[in-house]
Length: 191
Image 1 (cartoon, rainbow, N blue to C red):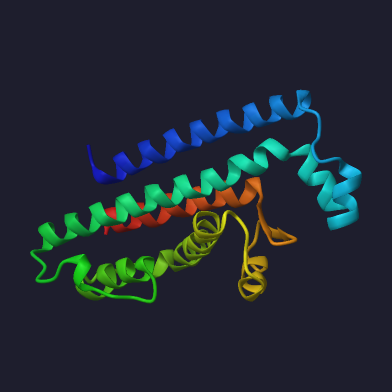
Image 2: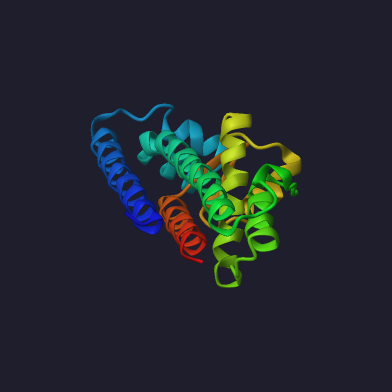
């Protein structure tokens, strides 16, 4: 099986898993009494965000986990693809020899500067994956809360909003991130 087929398979498995989780969230939200009350949330955050949070409370806990799952898939495959290209092209450097602003940046530098892959066509996907990395870091390192200093940057990410200090992830952000991960990984695998 080709690497690109393996990537497609794993992305489809995640997609199926996420669809089941969203179904579970939808079913659970119908039977679960809202807590805290919508009126209490409305006083603190405004009516629209309160309605979204209350009607969506289970999914609000599921989406951060999904973002982490996508990034884990991405990180696993980036390491594997570095090793693949290192062996295929007899490269003098290992991906761990390359430093970047972030680990994602270091992987990309390895692919473009050492393995000499042309990944120009998937730079928009890389930008979206960098946004996923930032959101994932807020989830992992801040319990899905963001500092005031990072708030402005996080709020500019499509599909992300901040309520108080809590990062709220939309369904669209999850699906878009998964597709961008697939697009970028396939491009690296087939280059």
